[in-house]
Length: 444
Image (cartoon, rainbow, N blue to C red):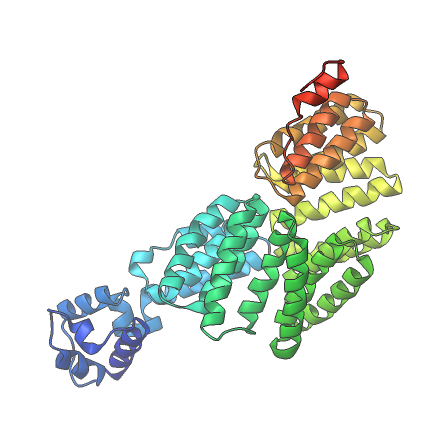
């Protein structure tokens, strides 16, 4: 009974309950004390009441993780994680959905739901991932489980960013960061990773000055307190900020540093994603290096094939298409763009717009002006469904440039106007005197 008593005490303390509070009207506090001390065996009815008040199961109180339901759930979680690592997100999702949370201790609920959310993210189903993570985050914050909340919030910030909801991405991340700092947890890997992840939504929203300031703070904090994994996350995201300021030399230094640090942590998926980021940078540096970018993408390829999400792999296809286009290999550029579009589906995503833009470029270069125009207009329709932001403004600008090169001045003008609106620049009202004066009418 000692094990049962130990588990009861641990769950009670974790829930922030005294023996009196746990006993309530059903038992005396001394009865709870006797159970925790291993001097009294509770009846099945008493155990059911205690389990309900502690948000667990009677099986877990009696047997711990060695109980049948707990053992099966743990095995399923391990299989699901292995499936995610080998690129089998569907299997991971199905295994987690098949579990009955009502028969499993709440100590495993968070791990099950986070694994499910990552399976959804791996399938590109961002809305489903967000739907799982939001209530999980609320529960962790409500119980002051700050490090768990930071891990969940990091996944949510990324999902909201990919879905185009920049304001929610930033607000949620900053709230959790403030709670971590108030709890004295600044400098932990969880805090550094979340802080680094929030940099990108700030960049997308156009807050470059603040993003640059925050990146410098995080680098100082990470070098003083962080592990290689935490420091690598900071340098990675600081590189993105440097890119947006067009300081490509600094961005490449930060990226190289991030690759070295994250490589030490053994996180294959992060290394693969960082290589994608490096390829993106090489294609936008002046001068661009499409061959070097393809080398990075090729090195990332095997890892992405096993552990990358559909969004990651599609991003690699888009950047490969861009690189082949720069090298004049139009057939490969078109093939890569079409594979990316097939992976991403029809959901409103900035990556989907990018895939159609690069497909339009490949078709236009091959002389298929009608196909190019269709791809560009599809991107325009998709962008019209999405929230405003820096990246969206850049996409509208790129779309306007393409319409202009295609000779469609009216569509180009509309795209440029939309780019300005997305960037926060609204139309101005022209004083009547301007038009009156133009037509020779005196305005007193």
